[in-house]
Image 1 (cartoon, rainbow, N blue to C red):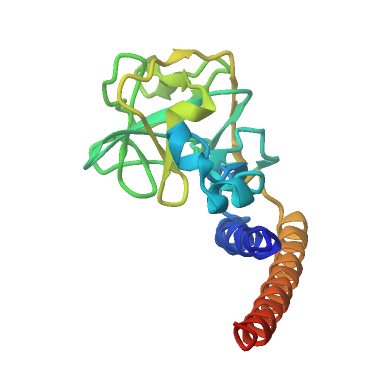
Image 2: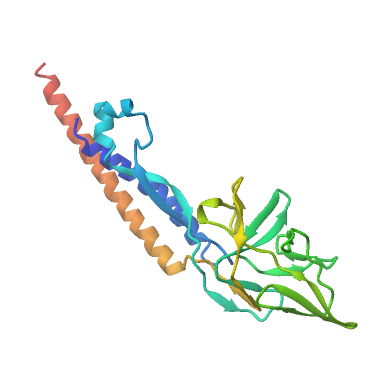
Length: 249
């Protein structure tokens, strides 16, 4: 049987899966700290027992790539000044640690607020953690955040150190996206020291722009349409061949 059908079909599936990823990246182009996901490909039967590759179908399709999954793009997003003293951006590799209802999560979104009890929180109400995994309480007053993440507050009684932001670094394969801009570390993953500089009064945008994201989405749509036409062509050809040959049997 012509392996072209398998190649076209695998190509169509891969492009349809890639479309979902590209659409999600584009929809979050304006989300602070969003990390885009990128596709990677593998052989369709890679990792299967050798005996399973000796079939006609196995030989036909194993040379053609399919979508293996997604990896996080950890490249830097654009940093924009906001003037808000509790807006913090990371210049370099690293992530803020926050305490959610489901455990510790990591984020590049530094749009923080002072909670009712003074706790430094995300807009979702998750507490921002220091290097020891403890909540940071910020007294009322003028807040200054150093490039190393040290938070000091000028209160009526004088300057006081509120704490130091916990900034952790991970390998891309150790993190999984959860929601729009939260990341969860896989079990057993080890955080390393981060050398990222904290910029006060700024926010980091997504690392997927609207223009680039739109172009990728359009390209994948056209590729999917091309693969669909190829599948239809091979399918019609096989139907015709089968009808003509079966009549001769």
